[in-house]
Image (cartoon, rainbow, N blue to C red; front, side, top):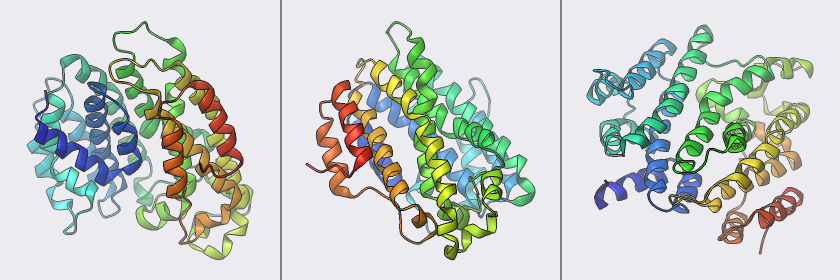
Length: 338
């Protein structure tokens, strides 16, 4: 299905765009490893277009719709069509994400090389993501950046951009097994948890670099704050209850994520370790956000130190549900080092 050169290429691209997800995928085995890697990279193309501040909203919507058509069965739109449309927006200095966008036709070849059943399972959640991204961009076209209004709207947005990834993983994992209603119902929470953690950690970065405000307007106004206060690091202390509210929202998805992990079948190369690592890193990041919420408005990045990352990976290889529960409790309380 994949030549060794193509495997090396896709793995190198993955490591360039997301070290955390690359780590998770490295803990999978074949055939699921190649399937999830390809599906995730397809999603990252969409993320890059959505986050590009230099592309006008209407053009973003058009690009996302073209990309969606490329992934639509029997649609005549080709990867070359998307590549031609996006060419004028590719920055001169290309990040790993933009290098991936320029090689979308090569990525689509990797997708087309997958078994038909795998393609049929990857396609719906990715297309739902593209539809949702385009809808949200169009909704806030006049402000040229997202301005989420309520917690409910934030949850809907997070489902489109990340809950769909949980569903994608679940669809592939459930292949050739008895359908698990618990797994399917809890799948979106995995993606929502990770996305809400990222949104909370990157409040200032998303505003400064993408002109997007994911903190709901009603949460800000309840504490006498506005979108423009995000650019004022002297407001750090005032943002503590805002960060606390977002941390609370993220933590509301922990129980269902644990159900998802506990129900995950280890078949077709799937492993519990692959998904336990990002879950536990999310728990660790939430701990740091509770400890130092003011840092979300400063240049200092809220992150888990490398020593703890390596300790978590070592602790879950191999994992079991009881060890994950114990690790979750320990990591929630303090940094985990072995």
